[in-house]
Amino acid sequence: DVKVTQSSRYLVKRTGEKVFLECVQDMDHENMFWYRQDPGLGLRLIYFSYDVKMKEKGDIPEGYSVSREKKERFSLILESASTNQTSMYLCASSRHRGLTSEKLFFGSGTQLSVL
Amino acid sequence: ELKVEQNPLFLSMQEGKNYTIYCNYSTTSDRLYWYRQDPGKSLESLFVLLSNGAVKQEGRLMASLDTKARLSTLHITAAVHDLSATYFCAVDIGSGGSNYKLTFGKGTLLTVNP
Image (tube, rainbow over all chains, first blue to last red; front, side, top):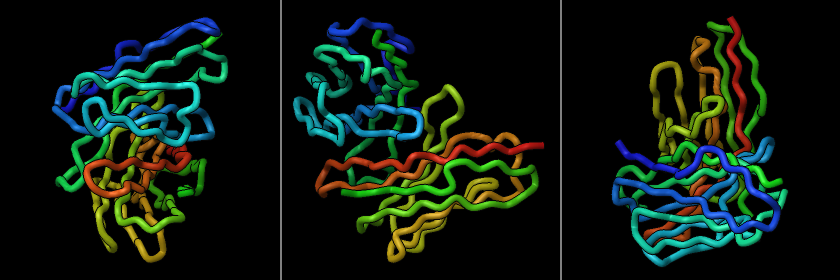
């Protein structure tokens, strides 16, 4: 089974801190994604990557950046955390489009609180 | 801008009853996904619908896709308590080639009461 591992289940940070959220997948998937989930808003895509060192903005990239130096690892960076970035962050991975099953496999999430 | 709308957003039903969750989307697409999320847990894939008229069934859940109407349905038959969860539909709006991204609906919180 695919395993998508997020490094922290809960994080508490202070406003202005630089925050790194790490995600690792073990199935050699090409695509990786970062979503945030907020009550009443569902899941919103922040950034995604379809190859090493490649990245594309999602729907809400402001205040975030990403890094994909290795195929299995996709990092989300909050350069200067703000209280409105308090949220549940979900990492996901999938194989390339065109293959038989392109569903997303999700990590267990990181609940980030910015005080 | 793609919009994905689910209704209802909240659904309380009794065990043994049938009901349908609807997912409408605003842009042409022939790829739609359903996910389930249990409280405090992450999302788990339920169904992948890849063409007009596609129908998938597993247990008490059946999903279908009508790309002309831009509508997918998730039908629940004879609900049981274990089906209580939040259900999300998601539409693929990828630009083709090897990359794509999904836009999610806001989710339907289903509560099945004894």
